[in-house]
Image (cartoon, rainbow, N blue to C red; front, top):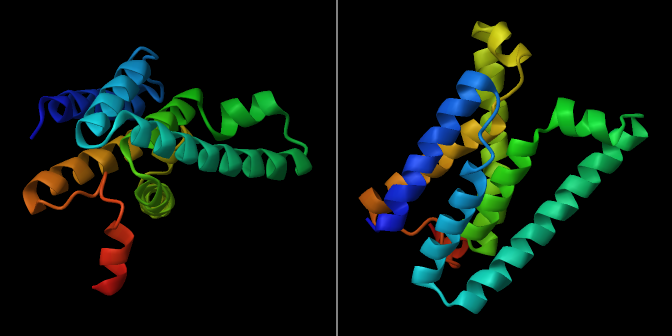
Length: 174
């Protein structure tokens, strides 16, 4: 395991703890996490490849968030309410971190599957503990747990789930 991965794991544990406990995350964690993730990714690829995939991932993220905002706009929800009630700043900043650590196909796969897993997990938790969900879903915290799990699985299974651009092809062939 690379030193940068240990640092990322430390930051992910901080995000998970703070989001579950306070439903808020200290903002300095995000630039440090994104920088460390970017450095880790550039250890395995070229700087230009990482920049290119990060921009593609941010474009995808911007498209999804724009469509979400338009949906809520048609439901007469103002931007302030959208950014406070439905998705927090910490969640958005965590998405930026995700965009720099994954290659584009893996980012899209992780983003969509992560949201589905978190939705299912939130429904199950809400069934047993409605008060937990009433405080809001700790999206960044749950995603931090999934990234943590992914990094550990990478190192145990020796499969690169973050940076391998042919991962989807491997999954489809299996």
